Length: 310
Length: 308
Image (cartoon, rainbow over all chains, first blue to last red; front, side, top):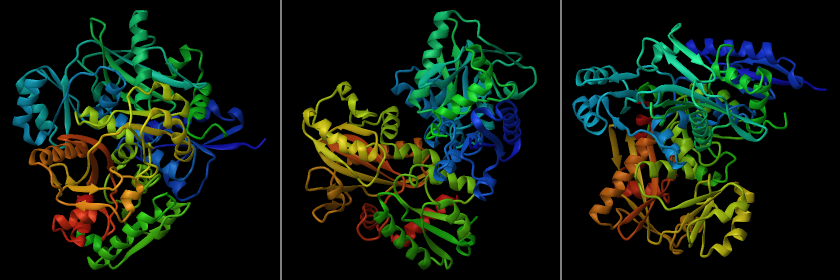
């Protein structure tokens, strides 16, 4: 039997490269030899220079900078089958406003929002207060992680948040939603779009999930499955599956939501490339359904565009 | 990088390629290339993309790409993504605007999200799902992801749909069934970047078939009128709608948006993130003449807005 070579495409620089290299090492450790595949770690530079031509790629180059969707674009143009979303879904997921439009078109409720230009902060301040009210949450329209997410409880905080966000060309303001933060993984398996068990987030010392909490040590705690009643869990899972389809995600995704004390769901965002590293929550949630790590990677490979014949 | 820096660099006009819109692209690209030479880009070359565009681009040694391409792979965000990965700056829209703009249903979803009217639609992902169609004819059918009005047809009744859709589906994949809107065809070019957007004079396309199919687009019978003879209120609304869609998609430098005008109701049809640029007969060239913008100045502006 001929081994096919599966390249695990890692990020180029910074924090992202570090995270994706850890994930890549884990994929190699867990999956080497699976279904007759030889897994190797590759970079975009190697691909471009044609030092290597894998039969297919497991894409964990998230592209934190830019629109998102650059690595899938390169792979598609090089006719290399790959896991995960293409440029369309990746870039929609990166944009918080477009995500709402696609979600709403599929019948999912989203909180109201105001798009503001931080350069005209007086006008923006009035707009936010009149349309959204306070407390409000402010975030860049297209940023991948929770860098520069601001909570404005009063007009003074609103002013300083807008001031701090001047470098962004556009930001989105939404009402601050009180409730429990949850996140729901979605995985395509055997032709079906499955919701994984709901993951609960307990955030310590921070009123909301910001960058500090996401990447800081010990400030965020995950509970899998989340402590929710069955009806609430099913509702969250149904929304995650619907949104995955609405934005055209391929293979997997993870949707962050807030559950209000009354049980209402509010979608915060969808991630087209959820973490699948050794400490990530997505594989843990999959494992609760009996999907062990190599099987998870196998699902991603089977659902990837044009990957079925590898 | 400034415009003057760029002039001394090797710059490639990417054109042709394997798409169905190859001929349109070759004509645009030749005119753009000529303009670049006029503008003092001594080292401007044309690159006709083949089966391995990445290798061609890398081997060419270009430091900037002017995209005069249309269609699948080139206008849908893939080439834009690849150029991002190659760290070669390029003209016009990025991955998001290109990918969403090229997918007609996605563009309509965004328009509707913004409160911009767009004809009712139904996306056929497999030819058998027509029974879920909820609105009445006449219809316009077109491939969901193709430009230059390829495959666009008007169908009078629901009875005729299956047989007309079948060949379209086999050739292009998912088919968009849209409610036909009677009225006039307007096309609106937006140029610039957020904070400095400009809407050029609106062009009316008067096609003999009463709607804008491929023959209408490229045939001799079609008449053009710019600025279009429309009410001031319609013009303002068209400009507002075009800017809203352009901004939401994070378009860059230039895009052209097509609308249908029924009485005073305006419907968004689609957005072209790389408008055809041939200097004599393209929609864009008519618009530039109405705006009194010399072609070469426009090419220069596209570059300036793309590198800013």
